[in-house]
Length: 265
Image (cartoon, rainbow, N blue to C red; front, top):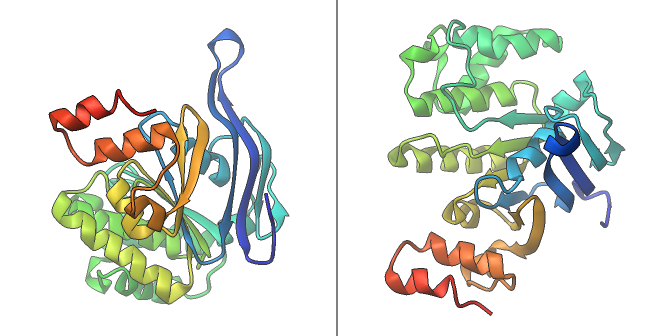
């Protein structure tokens, strides 16, 4: 894959396996993608396609991988150091599960700041809460005192505490009410502009991908089957059979749609 000074993230021939022997699961197979600095790159596919596993390999949560992962031209090994987490952070799918139920917002946001030696953690917490559309009045609340959307805003604030340049977004709105999803997506768009961020966004929702992303890779059974731009997706111009099926299915059920899934060449 091409690499230049404009490349924020490079993945080459990534394979990820879980387990050993006959019971091993080959979750990601020979995935190669290049993400440019400042763009939003989407990974889309049905459940089990391997898209979230790619993020877990990048973040260091999945350690049994082979291939190459490089951030800003620096190759990553299996372990991640502090310098990595100052560049790359992850926002998880479930805001109910990703925040400790007995930790206040202040403790949740303050912990990475203290680990990484931020001098005025309190001021940073209040600043980042304003950035995500909350405010200092949320600082000493517990997760059970927050709505789902507010919890995800806190999770985004936690990811931004160390001023990273790359965010890994794993289905960041799928656990939220439909009325809240657009608010979080618009927040992410605004933060990207204000802080010059690069996003790698995982979603099964093609409408979210088309709205958020510049380019995308479609995954099926652990492999990338097609790369295309968001404009090509919006114009319904995929060439791969699976991508066509995914696009057709996203339009909603009707009899003609269901029949068409069986008739692509």
